[in-house]
Length: 285
Image 1 (cartoon, rainbow, N blue to C red):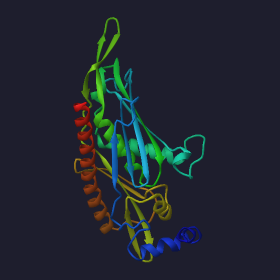
Image 2 (image 1 turned 90 degrees about the vertical axis):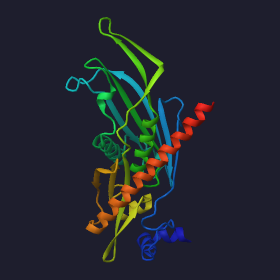
Image 3 (image 1 turned 180 degrees about the horizontal axis):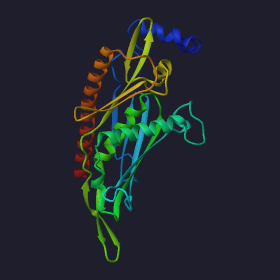
Image 4 (image 1 turned 30 degrees about the horizontal axis):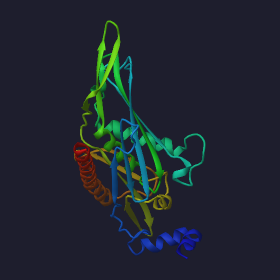
């Protein structure tokens, strides 16, 4: 019966919950969904991770490739991110070219990674003006249950943290390239940027801030996905993006910043524990 009521009167259905200071899925306004993370989820990738946050599931795979650096940046490599939203993950998407949502999400993820400076592209350069690593980071959404950017960033960072770069030797005279996969080094990361999404809903004379919104809550609050995305790296705010929704008061902004900072620390712990468990298992095999 509740699903019928939700379908016929979506706004009244949502307001009934908000008026009681609870969300349709039973969470409080500031409560986040549980995170389940697994690394090395794709055996054919050079690094990978799978995350499930509530009903949102995203898998990330990274492939390495060698290329010539750009002429204007001869001492830098490449980190290319891409997010795919197939029709499988939500009824909102249709087969065909990438949707607006996919392109917007890809741009947001790329901006967060670039602004955070978590990867120094000069570390990907092997021989200036001659040879550099290209990191193709593809994220595939299996189920879009809301707060998609948060899940993409976590699974991407978990993948990057497990990535190993093979040793490469380059002969400048013959231009001969040799790759030794037996000798690998960890990719150096400057912190772990973690994004936190918020949905802002105007109820009567006040604005309600919903942390880690579901896809249903995002739809009710308007905008393309979450209304606000804050990203912290090493305890510092490195990205802030606002998309539609109601105005944000100073009190709401301060509360959101505090929550985003705390969630970044929690997500870092989840990633570290997951990787330690994985490494302990692989070392004992």
